[in-house]
Image (cartoon, rainbow, N blue to C red; front, side, top):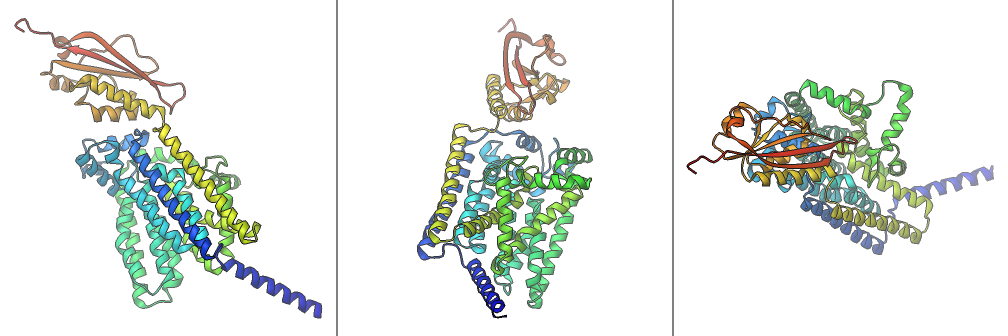
Length: 537
């Protein structure tokens, strides 16, 4: 009997010791927290530098960016309600902002990427504050390091797509919710949520999943507060539902039924399979694939390490009451996004770009996972300090490597780089004269087509309208495009232009690979025609 009592007392002491060890911050001495803060500030600066350098390098537009740019040309604010072309989906406020930039600043890379760049930089700075508010010093440093150096947040900060806005809205919602949970008697966080939720859902479709998740996280705290707090929470949810319904209505105008079917087929792998026997494999591949690509990863298990760290972070946070609240903030948005994927309304996984709203949660949970593993395998402070420094140095070297890659390869694909170069050369060759497209624009790659319309003084279709537009010109250029090889017989100019203009014999040819299609090259031929000089000239 005495032995049993001693064993119970020993187990109770060990349990109390483990609980106390979990509550104590990792590396909590003054000297440790000082260098952790220095490392944290260094990673914030590194993240800002990487994003700024990539922005200033002006990577050529890639496919989806070019499609967005083509939707901005010859467009009005109301014209978007007639539907987007080229199977594109984007929130209305994002489109209006980009159209304003296009009309005021032009279609250059710096102009159209200004909004995503500001959103990406703001998201990083606000995530710094969020991680400091939620996590102890060591975990906060690791979380901000992951966010700062990860490839997808850096890349989407410099793209004409709303993905960096998805991340920014997610961070803002989490920050306000965390502030409320820390001091639930304050009304300001709820007031800001009420004011901001219609605006955020106008800029970001997946922000609704984070907004719904933080509503669930705040619920237990709300009902223990005053009537004013409860009314504000109800108002927030009412505005959330109203903004969501408005988004759905507007999206119906922006996206055609055929485009929805095309996107459904494109994102088919991001929806859970109907066969339950296939679900475990899909679930594992999704969570070890591009969804968890922080700082880097890929499909087919390429992000397994990050997935393991996230699972470890969930386990570690669940064992301590002080960190359990983090799970209430981080996990509901995953569940809501997954439910939307179950009804085939939003992709879950398959690509990190459409799930940037989950990036803050992944970085936070992965950082908690690293801390939990360090606690379990490095018991003394010296070993713990070395482990944290090892992670920091590894992420720093990764950041340096990715920065060098951007500097020496300032383009996403060869197709994007060559499309911009050839379009600029063709426009320079035209020297202000109109260019007549001799065949279907679908034969042109979207990158080249956008840049050609952007750089040229006038790009006309091969119709009688082109003949009327060029009637007063002395020279015109004809451009025909194809894949791999062009027909020997050249088309004629439209209408009476073929009678009044003669071929000068000058033909310029260009060819570059189309990396979206294997063994396929874009072939461009530019033909110059001139009006013969009259006898009295």
